Amino acid sequence: MSLLVTTSPKDCSKKGFHLNKLNKKILCSLSSLLISILSVVFLIWLVLHPTKPEFYLRDTAVYELSLASPRLLNSTIQATVVSKNPNSHVGIYYDRLRTYAAYKGQQITGDSELPPFYQGHQDINILSSSLSGIAMPVAPSFGYHVSRDQTAGRLYLELKLDGKLRWKVGSWVSGSYRIDEDCVAAIVPRPGADPGPMSLVQGTHCSTTV
Image (tube, rainbow, N blue to C red; front, side, top):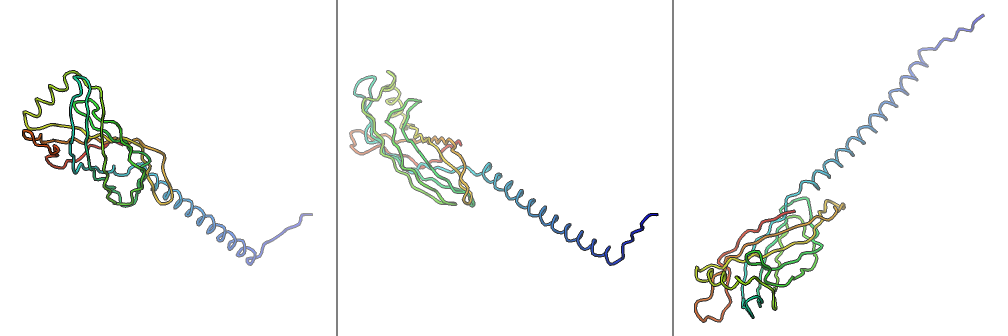
């Protein structure tokens, strides 16, 4: 003899109710997981595709550029650079920035370290550097090239900046990235025995590599 068990319609409706409730919970969990994944993907996209900061050489004054000997140079240069963060959702930590001046590929001042700073969304900062060099080694042809450029009416110097930065999105901060800036300054030589500094012709945008 076998025992026949039957399920009433009421029991079936209860099972269906529990199954629907379970499906809703699974659906909610999957939706939450999908939103979390999309948020992480969007965050990564912001971090991996921020717009590079913009640098603009606003002013350069050359107070001294003289040879102590054919191979040794003394220099004093004042430079002002404007830095802008063009990102509306990404901040920038500048952990280190080193500046120096160069002429035809030769470093003509010592290094100057700028203090670390944070640059908020679309913020603008003005950075000033006092650069100097005492007995900086240069090529024997240095004096010839400077004299030739002064005669031509333009002396082209390069202001170099390099260092480390980190991107900030919300409370998340990325690892360090190297940044390099190359700013070209067209300097007008002093006429005759004019004791004043040689100055920048006009401001110029810098080339940025991150």
